[in-house]
Length: 215
Image 1 (spheres, one colour):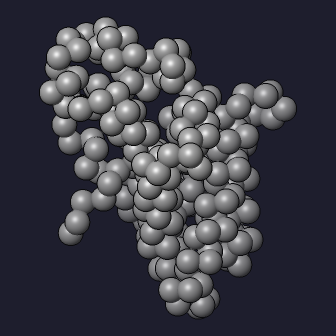
Image 2: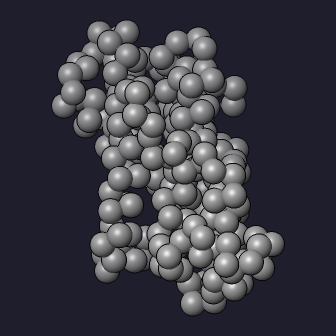
C-alpha cells in the first residue's frame, strides 16, 4: 500500500523537529520574521544542518505547510483507525477528532491562514493545498462508504464523493470557528453538533454517529 502524504512526513524525527520549529517561528514572527537563523535557534541546531535538509527557506516553509496539514489529517485518521466497533464508530471518531483538541487550535488556524493566503499566488502552495484536500476527501469517502452500505443507502463512488465534500465543508467550518476562541459557546459542544449534522447530510437514523463517540 502506498504511504499517504500525511504518513510520510512523520517518519524522520529530525526533519519533523525542524518543521515544528518552522511552524513555531511562523506563528510567532510571521513569514517575514521566520528566518533560517531564527528557525535554527528555535530547533537548537546550526543553520548548516537546516541546509543539509533544505536547499532554501522557501522549500522548508512549503514542507512545513504540508506537515501541518498532514498532522491535522493524520490525527483524525489515527482516531478513526483506533475505533474497533465498526464503520459508524470509525467515521464518528474521524469527524469528532477534527473538532477537538489537538486539531482544534487557535495556533493551527492562524498558521493555516498564513499559508492559505498564498495558495492563489504560489503554485507550490496550491499543489500542497490540493493534495491535502484530496487526501482528506479520500479518507472521508473510505469511511462513509461502509456506513452507507450498512443502512441500505446509495454508496456508489459519486454518492460517496458528494457526501465527502459536504462533510469536509461541515468539518472545516466548525474547526475554523471553534478554534478562534470567540467565547460565544463552549467548544466541547462541537463534536456533538458535527456528528448530528453529519447524520443529516448522510440521511442516517438519529444517533447513528452521536452514540458512537463519548461526548
